[in-house]
Length: 299
Image 1 (cartoon, rainbow, N blue to C red):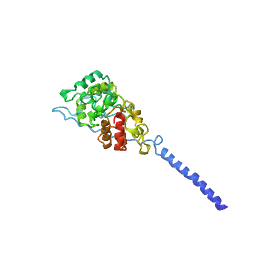
Image 2 (cartoon, rainbow, N blue to C red; image 1 turned 90 degrees about the horizontal axis):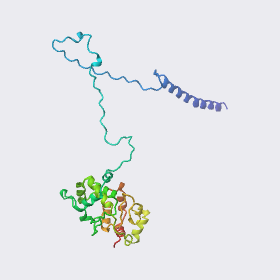
Image 3 (cartoon, rainbow, N blue to C red; image 1 turned 90 degrees about the vertical axis):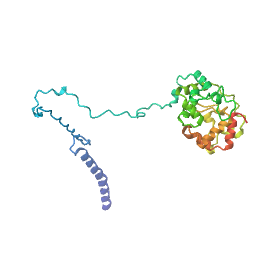
Image 4 (cartoon, rainbow, N blue to C red; image 1 turned 180 degrees about the horizontal axis):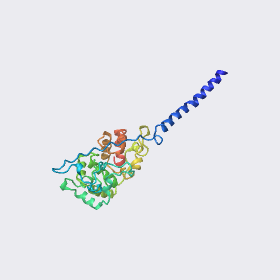
C-alpha cells in the first residue's frame, strides 16, 4: 500500500513539477533579460556614418580652426543627398494585383471592323508577302475543295483571334500560317477574326456518316479509356461550345484527321493544359477516321 501511495506522489510531482519548471524558465526568458518589455528584439546599433574627407585648403586660406564664428547657418547649406536611392520597379504583376489575367489577343478584337477584315481577306497584303485568305479558305470562309484547309465560317471571333495570335507567336506551328500571321498587325488579326466570326458556317450533315462508333464517342465517350464525350466540350454533334471550344461540324474529314494527328504526335501544342494531346493519343486510327466522317457528314 505504501509503495502504491509513493508512486502516486511521484506521478503527481512529475505532472506538476515539469510544467512549473517550464513556466518559470519562460518567465525568466521574457522578463529577466533586462529589457523594458517582454521578448523584444535586440537593439541594433546603426554603424557610424563614414567620415567625409576634408577639402584641401586653398593657398593662403586660414586653417579650419581659424574659421570665423559668423559662418553661414547650417540651414543655408545644400541638403545632403539621400543615401538610399528609390528602388527600381519590378517587372510583372504585383503580389497585391488580384485582377484576372487576360490574354493579349482579346485586345485585338476591341473595336475591330469586320468590313476591314473582309477587304483584307479578299486582297491580302501583297507588299508583306501575304496572299489573300480566300485563296485557301474560300470566298465566304468555306473551303470549296475541302482538304486540310479549315472552314473559318462558323468559328467564333475569339477562337480565330487566339489561333492567329498563336501562329504569330509560334506556339502553334504551321509554316505557311506562321509566315502570314507574323506579317499581320494586331489590328489586322482582330479585323479578320471579326469578319470570319460573323459568317454562317457550312450546311450541317453531321451524323450521316461515321457509324455507331463515332456517334458513341461524340455523345458518350469511353470511360474505360478516360475519354469524355466530344460533346462535353464541342457541343452535341460538334456544333461548338463556348468562345474557345471550336465547332467541328462541317469541317472536312481531312482537316479533322490532320489536326487530331498533330495533337497526337505533339506537333500541335496550343491546346489548354494538353487535354487534346492526351485524348488524341487514346483514339485509334479507325476512330479518328470515323469521327472525321461523322463531323463532316460525308463518307
